[in-house]
Image (tube, rainbow, N blue to C red):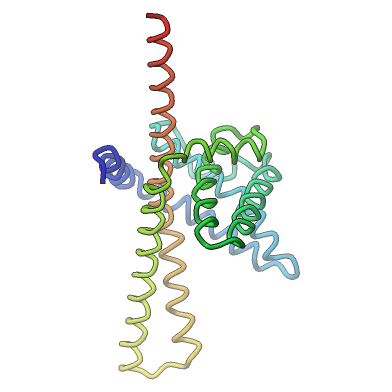
Length: 233
């Protein structure tokens, strides 16, 4: 791990420790709203997906405010309701592009996913930007840093897998004490894994990816300022 990458991880740990309550509560609010939307008959899942697209952008804005030391509130997750159509289009377009590239082979799909992984953060910064422009900006920003971001996503998947394993072990041990029905053995590990993943693990890695995004933007600013200084000379 490079020195700069290591520093980003350390900074993220500090930010998470200082703002843990706000980050976890914000994430909890997002997923509670999504879950409530799923309870609506007929169109519940569609409504939940539409709502998730918007609220996740709001959550990413909170993440960026934390990283930049700006003021924020938990209710800021609802700030992007005016851009709900744009947020929905961004998510759907990125999913379609990733799916199409995945048809070739799994590797192109992974590369495509990494190319567009910063698009929501760009949209959180510039909500009036077009969908395709947002995706293109993400692609340019990620160029040369895909391996670093891939490691982050693999680490996230590893933590989720660890939680799933531990929750399954808990159920197995519990069955030695009291025999439980099959539905209990399936539902409990899934519920525990999803809860810990979406409320604890995902928020931390959102903060980490947001930190990478801000650092990449700062590098571009430094490069541009360096070029302007050299031109003046």
